[in-house]
Amino acid sequence: MKLYVYYLSGGTSVREAESVSGVAGCAVRLMSVGQLTVAVSEFAGDAVAITRENVLAHERVVRSVLRHTTPLPFRFGTLATEAQLQSYLQSQQELLQSKLQFVSGCVEMSVKIIWPGVDTIEEVPAFRTNHSLDSTKDGAGAAFLKAKRREVLVEQIATAKAAEIASWLKARLAPSIRKDQVTIRTRDKLVLAAAHLVDQSFLDNYRRELRKARDERPDLHFLTSGPWPPYSFVNIDLEFKTQFGVS
Amino acid sequence: MRSTFEEVLVDGEVDSLEGSDLSLLETLDHVLNRGLVIAGEITIAVADIDLVFVGLNVLVSSVETAHEVLREREQQATLPASNASEVSAGSELPEIE
Image (cartoon, rainbow over all chains, first blue to last red; front, top):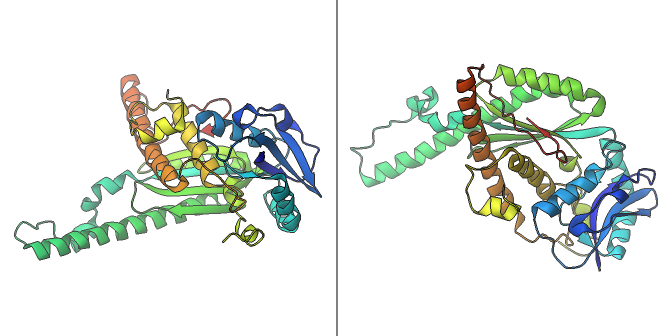
C-alpha cells in the first residue's frame, strides 16, 4: 500500500486536513518526522486518475490549512511508500525547513495575460516594414523563404511584446510581491503566465495594484486567480534524485 | 458541465465551458504542473506535459469565449466595457477574476 502525499508543513498544531476527505475518498492523516509534518492518505494502486473529483480532493486538503499556515504542496499524483517518504523528509529536512521559512505567511497569486493582437500581427508597423506581403509573383523557393521570414518576424514581435508586458507587470506589482515566476510564451495568444508570492498582509494592496494595472491596459485580457498554496515556489525535486539513484 | 477533466480536455469543445470549468482548469494548471516532486515516485495517469499544454489552450479559448459572452451581455445591458474576465469560482476553489 502506498501513500498519497498532499503537503508538508512545519508542525503538528494545524490538524484541519484530518477532517477533510482525501483522494479516492480516503481519510487524511498527519505523519511527522523531526520538525516536519506531511499530510497523507492510504492509496491502493500505482496511478492516480486525473479526475475532477481527485484534483479537487487534492486541492481541498492542501487548502484546508492555508488559513493557519503556509504548506509546501506536493504535485498532484505523488505516491510514495512510508519508508521512502521518511527517508525523503530526513534527508531533505534542512532544505525543506528553509523552503517553509521562505514561503511562510505567503500565498500564491496567478496572472495570465492574453494578447489578442497576435491575430493581427501583420498590421504591426514593425512587421510591415520588414516583410513584403505580396508573394504572388514569387517562385516556390522565394515563397518558402518569405514564409520562413514571416515566422521569424512574428516570433520576434511577439517576444518583444511579451517582454514589454512582463516588465510592465513587474513594475506595477513589485512593491507587493516577495517573488515571482514568469513564463513567456511567444507562440500562443497566452503570452505570459506569472505566479506571484504575496505576503498575506500585502494581499489587499496587491489586488488594488492589479486592478489598476488591468484598467491601464485595455489591449490585454487578464485571467487572475488566487490565493493558492505556493505551488510555483517549492520545486526542489533535483536533490532527491540521487537519494534513490533516479536520474 | 463535464464530469471529469479528461472529457473537458480531450474533446476540444470549448464553447460550452462554464465558469466553474475555468476554475477547474486553473486548479489543474496548478496542481498538475507544479509543487514538490519526489522524483521517480510520482505517478500520474496521463502524460502531464501534453495534458497541461492542452489545458492551457482550452483555458485561452474559454477565456475568449467568456469575453464574447460578457461583451454581448454588456451590449445588451449597455454597461461600460471591461477587459477583465469575471468568472465565478466554486466555493472550494480560489477566487478567479
